[in-house]
Image (cartoon, rainbow, N blue to C red):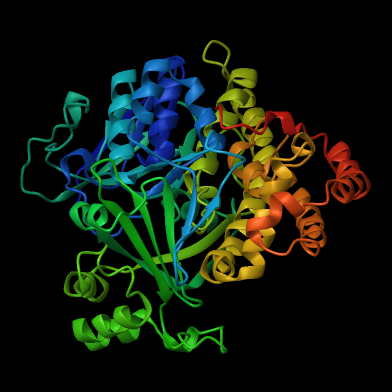
Length: 527
């Protein structure tokens, strides 16, 4: 049964955020520091009181996403970056000696490997310290849009345990039977939906006809596979690399943690019938088969395809048990066609544009959302002058600016899935990547940056996701042509025809750069 409660919003400029994940917590921190009265409602309990376990993918933080941290004090940014391990490229395990593929021009361009769990805990604590109110255990039931601002209805437990003292005293129910009660929130300002790929706010808006949504699931899923510290160190597992074992229709990856261990993830078809690579001898492998046949089957599969990884995973028995028994995660793309409902509500992060993780840009895209939304709120609806019309202008401009870029990175992430599964093991692909890096480090480097660099280290200078996508298509054609004159990846720098490259850049690439008004000088690791 439910107990009704009416929470009347007060304060001059309240903003309600639904979702205390990475994007919601960062946005709450920034807005609270800017003077908004921020309340965050989170469906689940406080992650700071819950041990990390199960289904997690280490995050890759890149300069594009880290630009949002410039909205925070320097000391907060510095403490956040201390959670990460620097990663400068891919380490490809395709047979024989591992092959290193650098991300940027040199070691000055790197990403951070960060635990999602640790980062989320950090950002929630920072939001709380900034003055935001966080209410955990609130499951959204409905959204009403008839008034000036929305009315939200939640189901919440009676007990206030685990709330860490952030609830208003009126919310501490005296009835401790454990039954849920209904909480009605009459918002005094707009609602920002930051509640992830399965967004309940987005679903409610869609049901009300305010938002059309297209979603598609990948035919593959993922499981966490831990590389213990002792095994990783004994095997000399390089901490500066994203380790990839590409095997066609499945692959294993590993990213370093601060404690010396690695968080690994194995990606594989959910069902054998999903196989799309008919010429791949491993195309019949699926999670469904491995789970049905148990640990022994998992061990045989790993010995057949990932023998070089088994010592790093702590041995075949430990690895097989993880593969057979760890929970399976889903992978998919969500594209909301409308993000804003006037000045009443707006979708951000995965609630607006969930993507697959294969470009490492899910969090970075969400953080860039925060950077852009805050800029537009400053312009149209700062705390001293905010109004429904101001919020509507900010949200409309936000949707117009961000949606084309969210669509672009969603497409590129899907393309990168094929690249990481198969192309990284292809000698011709490795040759082309070497040519690309040689071109970046040649005297023409100021006129050419790889698509990867533009995606990860861009953001300023109109180096948007959409522009990186458009330029990347032309650039890869140029790289393919230059690669014809190079005999091997090792000889790329020595054999690169700089004169031919200069001509191709001038004829094919620079007119498009000019048309898009892109400033490549802004492509930099510096956030």
